[in-house]
Structure formats: C-alpha cells, structure tokens
Image 1 (tube, rainbow, N blue to C red):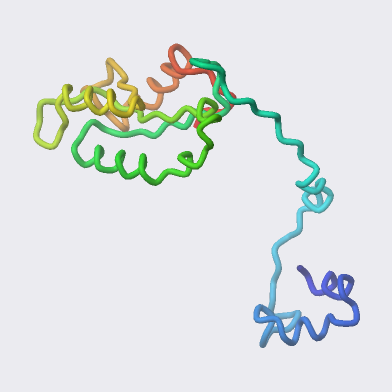
Image 2: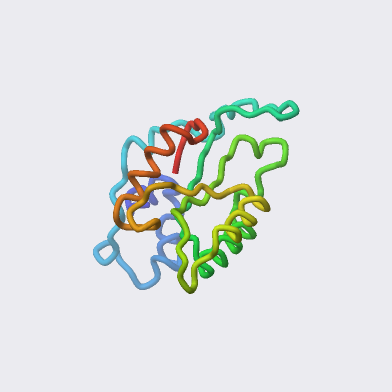
Amino acid sequence: MVWDEIATVVPERASEVLAHHPFFLGHTEETVSFPVVVPGLLMAPWPGNFRAPVLEPPTEGATGPALLSLHVFSMPTVKSRARRLLIRQLHPLRAVPTGYKHLVDFKFIMGQTRDEEGWLTQEELDREQTQFGDIVQLKGLKNDENMNEGKSLDWLQWVARSGRKAQWVW
C-alpha cells in the first residue's frame, strides 16, 4: 500500500498506522519503496464471484479427460526410487477427495533401465509400476535414459500420442 492509499483508506488514522505498523517503524515516505500496483488487478472481480464447476464423482470404471496431468521427470535408479516414494507420500494431490481423483493424472516419466550399479532392474521397475501404476517409460531415448538429450521432446510426443487427454499438462 502506498502512503497516499493509507491516508485514503483510513484518513484519520494514517499517521497512527504509519507510526505503529512494524513494516513502517523507522521509515519515512522517502525511505520506503513500494511495488508498482497493476491497475488490472485492482479492477479484477472479487474471487468470491468465481463459480467453480460442478464436479460429479465418476461412475464405476469411468475414465475420460483429466482436469490436470502432472508429470514428474525421474530416472530408473535406486536414488530416484527413494525420491518417487517420498513424492508419493507427501505430494498435495493426495488431498484430492477420492471421488474426484479421476480428474488428476499423476505420472513419473523416465527412460529405460541400464545394467549398471545403482540402476533398478526392469523387474524392479515393473513391480513398482504394478504397485503404484504411475510410471511411464519412454522407449528409444538416446542411451536409454537421458535427461538432457531429447527426453522432453519424447515426453511431449508421448503426451500427444498416448497420454491421457487433459485440460492442463504440467
């Protein structure tokens, strides 16, 4: 809030607000700079006027477009599995009511496993997929798994070809 706005909001108490508010203690109009106010935000309608869409729980076995597809890039390694387990336990999408979970599509995107120390075997990855059902393995990546050489492009192509349709994909 700028100094002039304080005086217009509560004109009779402006100096009291300035004198006792922790943000303004020890400051004058010359020593405090305020962010630029965006006029469009000031004119925006009150958020309470927003009408949320009516959501209905799915019928048995219903699938369709998701409201949100959230895809997290990962790797088929032991360290990455620990991160995936942590994300599964703590991510905020767990708060989505059971009847509406069909509106959110959450997937881990990764390439193929390697026969190297620290990497999961394909059988371990298959068991994880069977247990959680949230892994997408992209085929044909350079060196089986590459975060920096085409994985993003292959993921976008997978979303367009095979991914579940969604209003938003992140």
